[in-house]
Every structure is written in structure tokens, then in C-alpha cells.
Image (cartoon, rainbow, N blue to C red; front, side, top):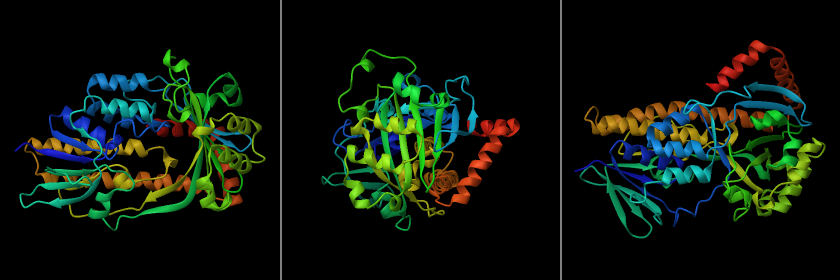
Length: 425
């Protein structure tokens, strides 16, 4: 019987795995709860690292990786740190760093990336399939049950079903996801000449952080295409939130709920109301930041809680495993969530290739994946949490120390060079 993999969830990790398995000649099927490929339109950009690009390149056919590169924006090669009045504290990276096919950063719309990852998989992606439970069969195979009463059998079941993974709940009930007490209010601003005038030049070659008082931090990043297509000149349906053709600047205010008011009230607010909250949260900050927020597409402004997984040590390996947010969800404060899911898919695919070739048993292959994954993934979770805690710290002495340290680093070229090398790596 042909070795067959069941993938629950058609997000970035699950689709990268499916593409990688198909490229390696391994049978798989993806089961997605959305009713169509257009149900999940997420318009914010994500940052793909050189490691992530290399993993994608290894999993995708050449023509699909070419399309990924073609639809990506200008790479982010710098990182800036500012105080709340836009005074520079530290800038690292290279504004005109050469872009490489795989060994460089890529900025890409989630919508565009998902379109690339879905390409050529129409015959194996099944929509409207809400997973309910799995069952170990006497034959040694595993059965996935769905809400519509159907089921599917395979040799390996992979949870790629995101932060609320039902498979994780069944397989690892002790693997908890917790609320950090922090939130992000985010919005998109059309990138035109007026918007460009408001921001430092560095932000058009990378991203930036503004450290403010009272435990509030603002993250800014531009998504700018290399060339402008005819389609990009016309407004897209749904505004900037669902537009994957327009240049824009994304802003995020990260803080804790107690600093902004009643959580339940905030979560019910529309874009215009959240914009007012953003103004109030940044009162006394840079005039340019307020002008930027004022220019936001109101339909793109949203609030969401920041949650995180808790570290999980090794568990008995079976023919059920997990990738991406299903096992190591993290706040976006390290910018590596999607990258880690892509690395998971690549690593699992490589280990399954060894099994199919007869070099390892299935359990050995999955165990090798899980052992390596928990090491790098939960290090990434720890980094994201450390960054979040620094960003929302209301300790004034810690804020002063951080700013002083950044100014010192900025004034010492050898240190800046080392930090730039570490960032590019």
C-alpha cells in the first residue's frame, strides 16, 4: 500500500508540507475546514527569512518559487529603533543590500503566498472538512473523522490546524495556549507620496519600533512592490485589508489591556472607534505617527489578543504529529511564526523521504522531526515572549536603560556591524 499522509489544515505550514511531499513523490491529502480557497483572506504581509526562503525553494516546484519571488515586495534589510518622537536610537542592516534568489529576506502578502502554495494542489485539497477526532486502527494506520460524518485513512496524521488545534488537544492535552495579557491594534495606510513624507527613509528598507512611555510600543513596516502592475492602480474590493496588490505601511500598537480600558468593549469596536483609541494611546507621541494613523484605511484597523503556547518537552512519538501554530503558537513580536511553520514542513518532509526510501521506520522519522523541531521552535517562542515583555514593560528605568543601550550600540560601528551580521543570518 502506498504511504499516505493526512494533513489537517490548509494554512502556510500545511500547504508547504503538501507541496514538499508532492515534489518528493509522496502521497498526501489536505483537509481544510474553510468551504473554499477564498474564505481565508488575510491581507497582512509576512516576513520570510533566508532560511524560510531556502526551505520554500526546496519544497516548491521551480515555477512556483519563481512566482513567490515575483509577487513578493521589496526586501526588508534594515531594522530601526526610535523613541516615541521618532528620534533615532539604533539602526542596523544595509539599506541597499543585494537581494538573492533564496538567501535573502522576502516580504510577501499572506494572500499571495497562500495562492502560490495552493497552486497545483486542486486534486488533494478538500474544503469544508472540519476535523473532529482521530482513531488508531488495528492495521497501524490512523483515521481522521470529520464533522460531516466522513473519514480518511492514512499512515501519518499531521496537525496543521492552527492555534485551536483539536489534534493537539487530543494528543497533548497538557500543551496549553495562554493569554499574555497583551494586545495589538493594527492598521494599514496607503503608501503614497504623502505617507512617504511622514516616515524616516530607513522604514522603506526595513521595519522599525517606536518605544514609548507607559509600556507601549509601535511597530511599523512598509510593504512595497518592486513594480506597479495595471491591476494595482485600481482599488481592490474589500479595501486595503484584502488588497494584495497595493503598497502600504502597516502599524501596530502593542501594549496590555489594562492600559487601554475594558477588554470586552475594545473587542467590539469597529475601525473608526479603534482609530480613536490609537490616537489616545499615543497622545504626546510624534505628530508624524498621528498623521499616519489618521490616513489609515478604517476597514483594516483591528484589535487582537496576543497569546502564546507553553513549552512542551518530548512526548511518546506516534503516527500523529504537529507543525506550526498547532504546537508552537507565538506572538508576532519575533516575526518568525510563519518561518517556523515553513521550517517544520521542510524538516518533516525530509524525514519522511528517509522513511519512504527505507532508511528509517516511520516512528524514527517522526521522532527525529519532533526532537529537532521542539528545540528551535520553542527557542523562537521564548524570543517572541522576551521581545513582547520588553515592549510592554511600564518600568521607566528599564525603558531608559534600553534607549541608552541602543544609543551606545548606534555610536560604536563594530557593534553595529556584528548586530547587522546576526540579523542577516
